[in-house]
Image (cartoon, rainbow, N blue to C red; front, side):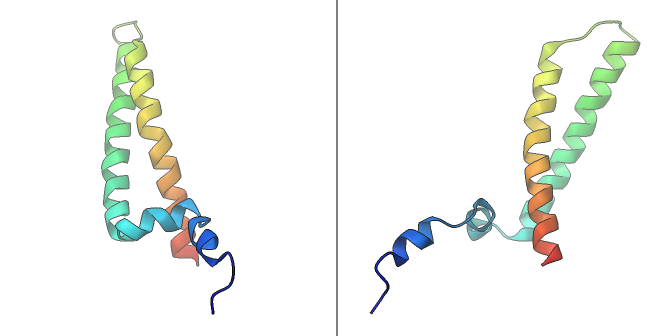
Length: 84
């Protein structure tokens, strides 16, 4: 016989376990590599516009945030999985 709230324990798993249910760690790593490449391009665009053209666009800053948040999250996930 199952414990009374066993199904709720299944729903209360961490976000990293839920991410890796549908994807392999290798595919998450490839997505992270592409994301870091795009992050480097956006960073270079921001630096180029700032120094060479003497202007700054807010869309580049928004793109920077869009690329940095998943990169930070997935890099922590990969580090935690490889460490254990």
